Image 1 (cartoon, rainbow, N blue to C red):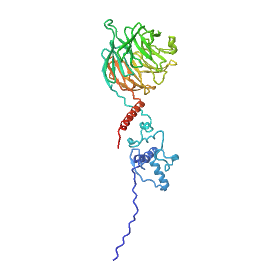
Image 2: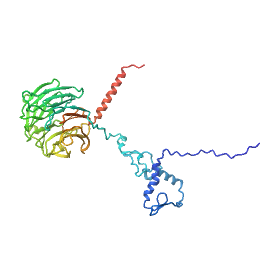
Image 3: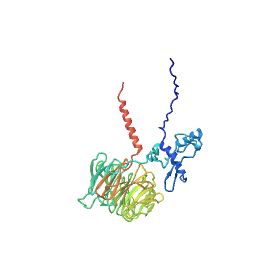
Image 4: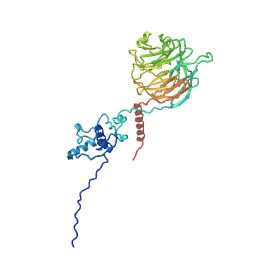
Length: 472
């Protein structure tokens, strides 16, 4: 019996479009947003309608347009889905999907979903393998220590951090040593208060070896102590008033006094005084040697700043006298990567940080900080400068050099921040204030080379441990 014949259904595969790789927001913007912008002066909007004066929209049937050829249609689609830049000379079909460029293309403005931007300029440095532009700077101190009887005197220098990671702080008539590694506290010395009740410590400064320390006193003496044995090595005399500023340069020690003089001493010889400079007219409160040890800067209460070089030191005179400050110049800091750059800070009537070319004596920049500048510290790993201040904010400020853009502020002290010292690794700064506290700020970034070396050493140590075992 014959079965009824049914026509066979064609067995062609059905095409299912895969639009997962299509950015519909970009495509819609290209199809609608651009045409709306380009035809904004026309009477008809992008939907093929027209607007009356009262704002009402009237639809009408679009005028018949001849269908484009397949090739033109393909080009139109390629152009719509490749809205960024296309290929060279507008050849979208043969253009590359990815391109290696110095900067990622900016997303088209006016897109409906602006949060789906494909690129961010903040990631360019990461994509290029460059150095990150930002780092976390803790705003709170790592540690706070009490410092009772810290003398509230702007012209003194009462704290220093040694190369052996020991902090010396003068509290009244006593010098204490605090080991930053172990936290141990030792008393180094005490002035002879029994015979001289008015004697107290006016300055401290570690020698480069981290073992010897110079201590200036109110009775015009400079004492050299061996900190490892808590023993006084010798006493240097010559000043006629308190010694408020000290600066080591190898075995050479510079001292500044209220008697307005700056003296240099060779601590190895009997007749220790090698030169005396009478350049200031009031108390000398700031002294700093350049990193190379060839230049010395001195600041005084006479608002002047003097720079001495090797030739002028031998002649007993200065090379440059700089009088741009309007108040006492105590805060001094030589740039660690530019040997001829000196930063100086002025007192309450000045409030400025000034930068100098030590070779020419020219002032290269001046920044008004709006408060008394007490101390300055350069970041040895980055181009940054830290300043401590008195009235009215009593804060520390971190500046980007040379633009002097303020990066961060560190608050917490309730009185003027008189002194600062930097750790041997250059990451931490301790501040001493008239509120009788010491605060430790981890405000400087670690040296990336040191971090890599530590990680490499740790990896090598782990491998050496594994080599001791035999695996079978």
